[in-house]
Image 1: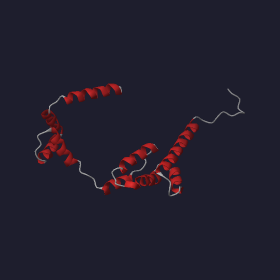
Image 2 (image 1 turned 45 degrees about the horizontal axis):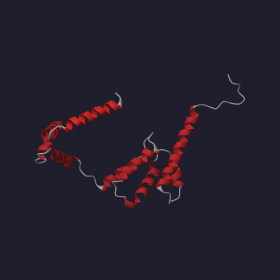
Image 3 (image 1 turned 135 degrees about the vertical axis):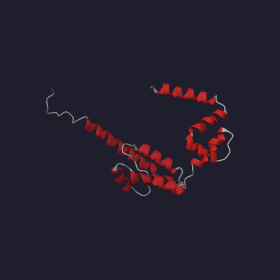
Image 4 (image 1 turned 180 degrees about the horizontal axis):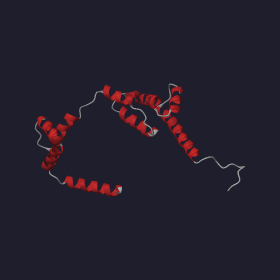
Length: 169
């Protein structure tokens, strides 16, 4: 199905839901919890309004993570095969934003890139770079290596260039 048709259907569903009253939204939410979810919901306390129900459920199921846990998640993040440097650094920035690294955030992201980038050539170059290498310089280096590798693979995929000594067929 075409994406624009699906988006229009989603907008129509949203317009329909916006017409529902609070009691109907609350009933739909509670129904969608299933038996176990409803059992848990009943133990959370009274909630007359839909928003109150959402707040109770969010408070129960979305337990806050400690900074230690968030930093472990950040440090365990490795660049996945096929993931671009841009995607990887963007995800690292998102993870780092909740780690309270403060003024060291860019350095930690740079170090993570040096340690867990998928390209061993990039890791080597970053490990050999001076200590004052900024994150933006490291990312620039990564983009250059990524672009060069992509170009090299395209050149290799098209086959050898025609030889001057070989007559055309």
